Length: 104
Ligand SMILES: [Zn+2]
Image (tube, rainbow, N blue to C red):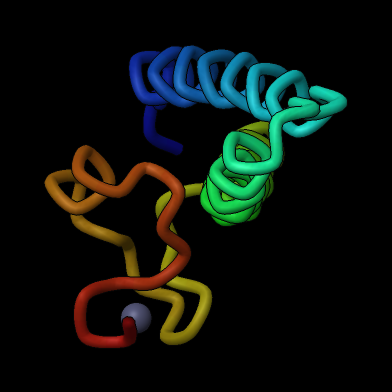
């Protein structure tokens, strides 16, 4: 089994910053809004953007948690489709990936 300590640290710090971002987004969305009509309309548009970012963030958090889980269980770095090792260069770029280049 390979040593993924460095990658694990990388994933954990990424997870941390994503969770912080998620908190920020919730703060923005939880804002009761402005009484001024025009600003309210603008804010709604912003809310939609924030919701989109929120969704993306949630997905990323999910993927990173799964990657950390696979590291825990010694299943990390193996393609979920063909069972081959995922090259470390690919893991460096996409640490949460679950498939090799030919299967993705
Ligand atoms: Zn594969």
